[in-house]
Length: 185
Image (cartoon, rainbow, N blue to C red; front, side, top):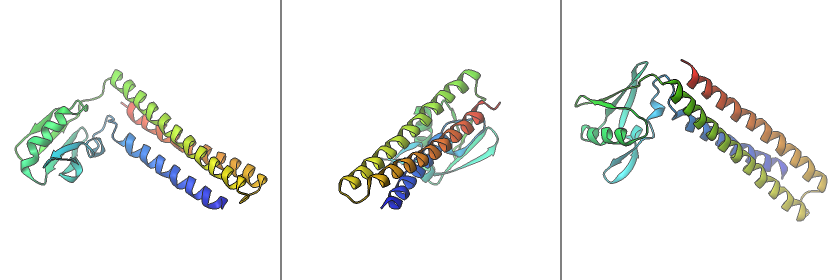
């Protein structure tokens, strides 16, 4: 009973860490990375579709992204979506593909991005604590229903705290790594 609870908690926390990782991947750093624009929603036949499903994205140079749509008719739509996004990038359309030149980040913009990273990391920590709270609530229900003893409940709460601490440390490390990546000139 307790092992299943621990496994479920670990699975949910791993999912939260992966979600944070993916979320932080979309935050721009000094280098060009396709993850910045992969999930950019593009209106395609009336439905919002992630850019990665409509085009191939490559990095021909350190500060440049190349977008080659599978269907050339979507070129203008992709260009408009990039301009409308909060990325602050200007697309260069050559009729077959779009080039995005990434200007170097200013010190002020880097600090703003670090604040965004801190906010996302804090959201992940809150998610971890919510998962722990739900699991402790489950354990207390098990104890009330006499499925586990009071000692098992106390041991379970302690084990859940250890799991939570371990994953919060992982979240902090992911955030610190992204912060260093952003501040790197």
